[in-house]
Length: 155
Picture 1 (cartoon, rainbow, N blue to C red):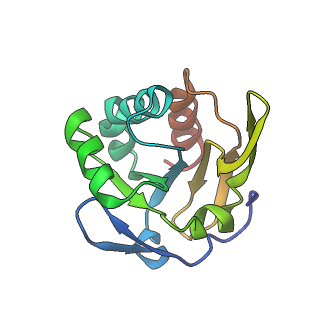
Picture 2 (picture 1 turned 90 degrees about the vertical axis):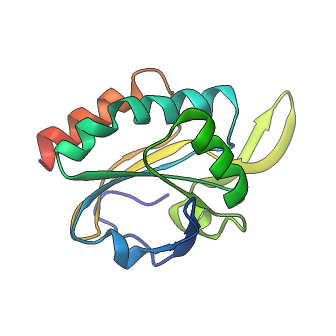
């Protein structure tokens, strides 16, 4: 998994609005980049809605929120519309970006092993460096913790 001090790896992914977003587009602003397993599931919906509800506060401290999952753009659009998400979701359908960040890992549920996204959040500064990592995120109160970190360290 990427660590504090690492540069963000180069990537280009399609966003909910059909545009391509690249690493270079992130430079010059603080970014909260969060990886989540799947649109429309309870935990992922709760996390997205928490970021939605705090989005204006992040904007006030010049910070963009971006979510990444393996779901295709069309599913992201439906998720965005259903929950009125004001931030960008990126489609990492081949898991390349998740692998580069170290969030594509072996998981185990009810004795079954499979590869999947480990819910993780990265705070990236204006220079494109990782300044904080939350691996294996628990959704409850996570967004408040992320906001507090950004406010105290990057605002």
